[in-house]
Every structure is written in C-alpha cells, then in structure tokens.
Length: 285
Image 1 (cartoon, rainbow, N blue to C red):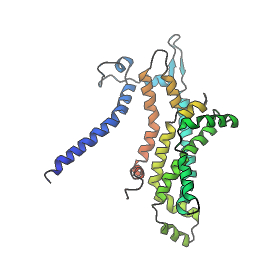
Image 2: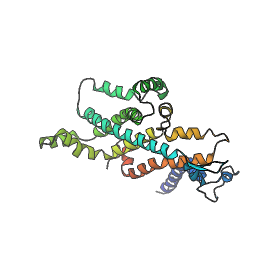
Image 3: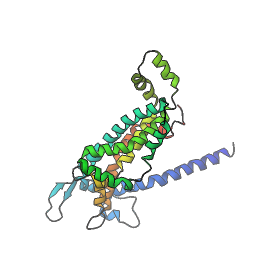
Image 4: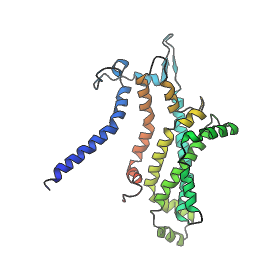
C-alpha cells in the first residue's frame, strides 16, 4: 500500500503529460485565432494578450484595402458545403453499411469471408491511386461540381468502414435473443429495429464520429472534383495559405477554430456512447 500512492501519482502525471501534448496544438490555434497581427508574431510568444474577434470577422467579411468596401467572403458557403457533404454521405453510408453488416453477421453463406475482405480492400488503396479513374468517371457521368457525386463518392468510401465496425458490434449480441423474438412472431426487420439496433447504440456513435472525421477532413477528392459551388473548407483553407502578402496565421487559425466546432459538438453529444464504441465493445456495461 505504501508504494501504491507514488505509483498512482506518477501514472496520473503521465496521463496529464500525454494529454497536454495532444491538446497543446489545438489550444495554440484557438489562442492564435483571438490574437491581432502583432501578438501572433510576438517573440517570445504571448500567453496573456488582449483578445480580439477581428480574425473571425475577416473570415466572413473581406474589406478592400484600397476602397474600404466590405463584402461577404465565401467561407459560409464552403462551410455549408462541408456540412452537407459530410453529414449526408455519413448518413447514407450508415444506413447501407448497417444493413449489410447485420446481414453478414447473422447469415453464413458461401464466399462470405471473401466478400468481407473485398469490402475491406477498398480501404487499402491510397486515394491518389484512384483519383484519375474517379475523375474520368465523374466527367463522363456529369457529376463534376455536384452534391450528388460527392455524397455518393464519400458514402462509397465510408461504407466499408461502417460494415466492418458495425459487424463487430452485431457479433457481440447473442443470437438467442433475436431467435426468441422471431418465435414470438417478430419479423426480421422488427428484430433489427427493436432489438439489435438499440444494443449497438455505442457502436453507431463511434462509427458516426470516425466516419464523420474521415469525410470532414478529406481534401484530395474535394480539390479535384468540386467547383466554386461545392468547394469545401479544406480546399478553401489551402487557397488561404497562398496569400500574396504571406500567410495570415490569425485568419487561418480562426478558420480552423470554426471548422472543428461541428465535429466537436457531435463528439460531445455522443460521448456517452463513444468510449465503449471506440473500444470495439471490449468494455461491457
């Protein structure tokens, strides 16, 4: 018992140290978003400064240095595009992937393992290896710069991850529970909706958050396949890094701060289920 307390203190200190390493870059970006140009480049860096919202104002409103005229930037449109493409594609992938995962979990048939491997293999190819055929396909089908094309593309990429994640959770549910419900007259669809899905809520939460992160941060396909009407924030952010007067770090930090908010809100809203989900069901309630 005498050695237990020092070990516990060391363990807690190590946890705080590792957490600080991961949190510090995010905290630094948020602090930079509230600094003016002088404080951003101050040496040594300032931790105490007079906060300003000027960077956030410039994210939405561009004021001409010559005429003083103000006009709305396209950030709101880019942000809305990211929200639409991410949430719509994840919703579509979740519906299709969950149904496929339940079927693969509950039914044994010929070549099932090969089908599972084939689904997983779609995640093995690097994005750069598929960008040219996807680009040509989009041009041929007239899907360039369209919400439909990007939602279908992102959903296709996410569905393999959803299938594997959700299958692992469905495998945990005892089949006897569902067989008893079927003996009582419940249909397959009712068993899935009323018995199976409520028991994998944590898995659904983890799958949604991780899939959303993948789609939310996707850059290459958005760069090649979107246009001015469907451009997402990562692509717009890359354009903001190429300013004629150098990189405006305060503006970049403000954009990044706003950009992480939706995913952060979703993760906080689902955190009750997230811990168990991210451990792939190894921590039982």
